Length: 217
Image (cartoon, rainbow, N blue to C red; front, side, top):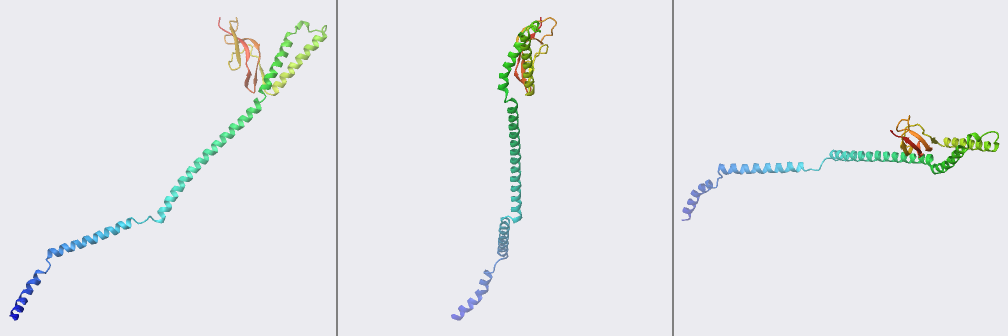
């Protein structure tokens, strides 16, 4: 009985071996899966290479660009600061020069009243009375005239000029019209009468002349 079982087992072994032999289709599928696995590993490795940190040259280049931008901004701010400083210096210098020129403006205005009084005093003296028979009046008149001349010289020395625009074209920046009247033989818009002379200090009108202006008839 045992011998018979052994013989049956020997006959069955080749069939079992053939049933466990892998088929070509299974081998092909396994090979593809293996190849796919290798490709996946290669892709992962390639991506890992791409995500590597940037090189030193790239970092230095980026830092260079940033520093150049900062340098340009700093230079622009520096130039603007220089321009502002120069403008401030020029304005301050102009203010100082104007203070030197026009600092005596108030004092000059006060002296103008003295000059007006001297002018009225000389004009009020009758010319026919100025003669040798009246030596005191003559001396007084000559003294007033000399004083008036001297004060005008002082005014001119300090940039204060008299405005006596009789016959000139009316200028609203230098003249103040008291009245308008038609005058025969005079051009309209010109000064026909000067009631009070004006003055200019270094080209700036200190006191406008009070005048009468000719108008059309």
